[in-house]
Length: 124
Image (cartoon, rainbow, N blue to C red; front, side, top):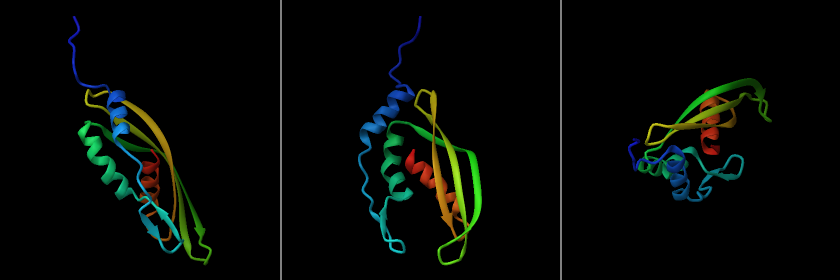
């Protein structure tokens, strides 16, 4: 005999998360390039409490990383980063599913990978 449980599957929990997450405006501004965006902090501040409430954990793993040295339009050295990140989504019952998202960035310092990771997370 199988014991009945009220613990939702990962798919049920993810559906509950997606039902509770609402649109998030592009509330940050990049003045240098003149565009609005939604940053990773805003996304995590909005989604984090909902993920925790539904007992869902999202664990990233980079499956592909490509780096290329480039120059900005003003001739400064920069690094272009292109990643594919796989995300394992774990539910309250311990089951999981995976999905993937790309992340791209260009940075003149040492933040290219972190920026690409945040893009992948926001996209996922």
